Amino acid sequence: MRCFSGIEDEEFIRGNVPMTKQEIRILTMAKAKIQPASIVFDIGAGTGTLSVEAARLAPEGHVYAIERNIEGIELIQQNMKKFAVENFTVLQQEAPFGLEKLPACDVVLIGGSGGYLGAILDIVSAKLVVGGRIVLNCITIQTLADCLQYMRMHEQYVYDAIQVQINRLQRVGPYDMAKAINPIYIVTCTKVR
Image (cartoon, rainbow, N blue to C red):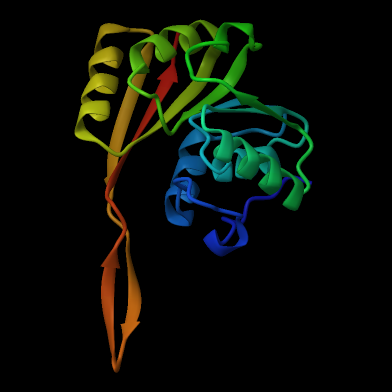
């Protein structure tokens, strides 16, 4: 069953691995436009939150979660089991290594690049179908700058970017105060040829 509800953060098994927060997942999934039969790569999958959401949106497709951290791999597998998604392959490797062995894809989610963003984009660009999307969640200005520079040099893409700043209210004694979540840039790149 195809469903997207923006799973609550607390429902995921987390450990000490970074996790994409619910609000950012919702925006990322909206930008990715995942279809029921989409093939999705989640590079730098962390705890697998985006992978799980993507697998639920693409019940006839398949998600490849790529993560280098062994704790992350274990958490992805636990979350995959918890949310009963079976259209899912977990790969412990550091991208871009091994990406060339994956099939053609419709959507690429990039949450971490380990400093190899250009090489990752080179490989996934060859795998991405025309009309496919790459959605990058950039925490640092350097990653954002690298992404934009790459896209400007590769005319087969059109792109847009948004900066997102989420604040959640936190109760402090008799008051409610805004607690900031780190701002993030979401860059959506569509392959037009």
